[in-house]
Image (cartoon, rainbow, N blue to C red; front, side):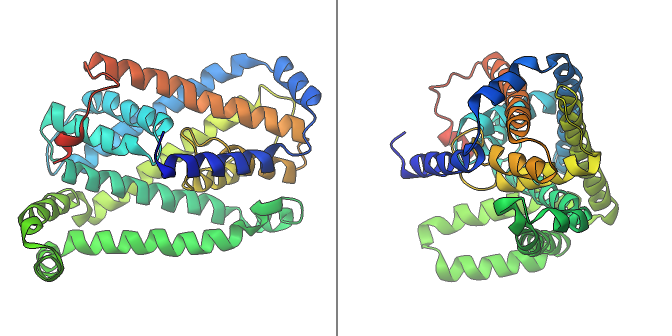
Length: 333
């Protein structure tokens, strides 16, 4: 609570909430919320958990060259990571699941973090693909979509960033000896002597985590799995939409999914408060959905995405015997 990053995230969330809710009539909003057919959330949550299981399988696949771990043992750790991302700032859940994986399976944190970064890069590529697939339609909406109208420029810059990162990781995976030599050169010249051995060890473990990228088939499998994961998440958007009296195409929901998830990379209060809601409402209102309806749907969707996985992750964390007050810092080494 005392760290400036936390309060900066809160400030950004407040700004985005203001952008999302300005001009909203609370009576209309509350009327839509109370009349929603919440039974549609059940199949939405179910398909979302299928997507989380597929995420656990993808992580198991990426970790395969290091250690074969069944998906059934990866799933609880994956949900704990989601819980951590939803509660702690700066996506601390990613480090949390790497630490728990080390505790349970003995996988070095540096190696598992490499696979987690690869996951996030592929997720970013797929999210941008969702946006690019709908750019012609987005161009028709930019006049009424507020700050989302700039998403075309954001998508271009984001593509350069994510594809650039992917190329770097692929080259590092395919040419590990060259990467080690380059890394040794930098470490020997720019790192204090006392840190060199530890950093060198971390570099080797990190490269071990990239081993799955050395096969074109494995890269293709990870990409296709990532597409499937995000289609399942869009299916949740579709199910929750049926709880409300509006309808847009599945492609529109793909566009919304891509935009809101790109927006949640912006620092914010825990749970992506505001950074999820403002762009989601903006996309729907650009499609002609009334503001009260768009706000009610986006809020309910946000809660449905946040609450079940957070509760399950907290339950798995408690089952592991880890208390909220525990310090896991020493286990990151």
